[in-house]
Image 1 (cartoon, helix red, strand yellow):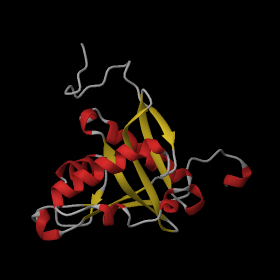
Image 2: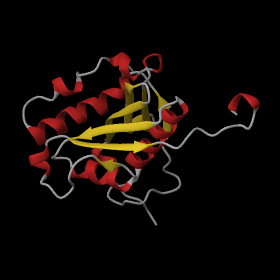
Image 3: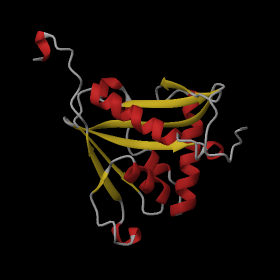
Image 4: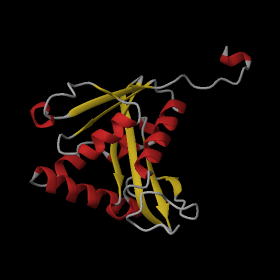
Amino acid sequence: MTTTSEDPSPSAAWEPTLLRVQVSDPRVRPLLDELRQEYSSRYGGDAAEELGRYPDEAFTSAHGGLLLLLLHDGEAVAGGAYRRYDARTAELKRIWTHSAHRRRGLARRVVAELEREARQAGYHRIFLTTGPRQPEARGLYLTTGYTPLFDTEAAPEHIGLLSFEKHLPPRATTGKAQDL
């Protein structure tokens, strides 16, 4: 079977590379540009304030954060980040899949990797919010095990930001004395 950009099942040959990056990495620009355009088209106005809400350093390991990209042929096709929300909680931010590469499970892969990395960094919980005009994001979080912190029967526009959480399993232990 041949995979096209509209085919939701990726071929085995189409395997993007996962990479830790800094916000200043030029490969992050497509993520930020497309998010800005998408947020602006869904909510009106300029999304620069939302995208600039946190300093770039918040997404570095030195500050308890992480930014990941999935690259295919050197180009960003998906990505996402987390930042330190509190000592036990990481907050997911900027989960994105390039519009030409959606419906391939890339956002799920990014979320799963961010969860794994957050757990390894010692976080016990993931928190996130998404906007009421992002039903795809709402669906992603519901199907990947996130608990909605809002009434799912209420109209999203009446709720405002849709908050979710997920408690992470404990880190695996090696069985060595320091783990006991």
